[in-house]
Length: 225
Image 1 (tube, rainbow, N blue to C red):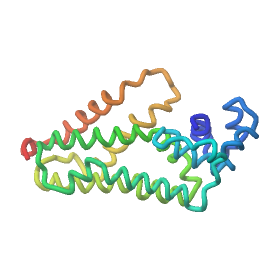
Image 2: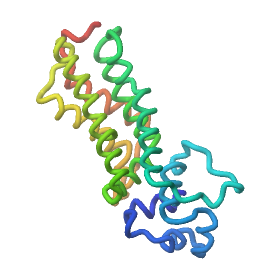
Image 3: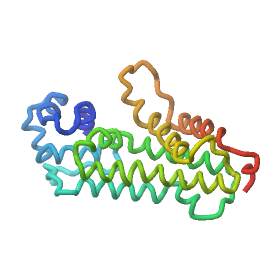
Image 4: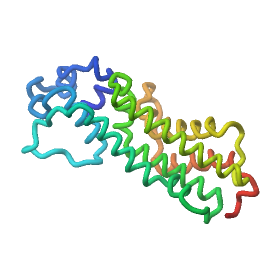
């Protein structure tokens, strides 16, 4: 799955050929077809399995069949729905604040980072291929990216209205900045072509980003629930 994911990330869906993946693996193209039915099946399998979120299919399930129309988009939508429902952000918005805003916001940002990091390969893969696949793009750039920005925007606006946080600019800009900063460190830097820096442990990056981003938003009024 790793070789397939890296090939799709480098070349996109349309340009990638099964031979490219076979070359990356050092095997004959026919060997790849023993595992997946076609290129669409390979992409769907990479999205599903490359992060180790789901167990690889057993031998009896091979070759992995081509996904039905809309099946890959449905898989991505289902994963997004599950992750969004479990976000600390969503839980914070569902009830009354019971902790200092600094602790709440730090936990929200750290949780967002860790979830992005856990799905790092599939996020990079979908982000690269979604513009070429309309149904996937609709889910990814709509419910995915825009949905998370909207939820963060709503949260920040609510907390700003009570004086718990101070916003240096429009809530949507602050929300997008938080999200994209987390995505940069959790996902994109792992494919930095420079390749000349050692990436820090995930927990260290998460706590650093959470502390940095929280510090600029907390007002004195928000120090207690």
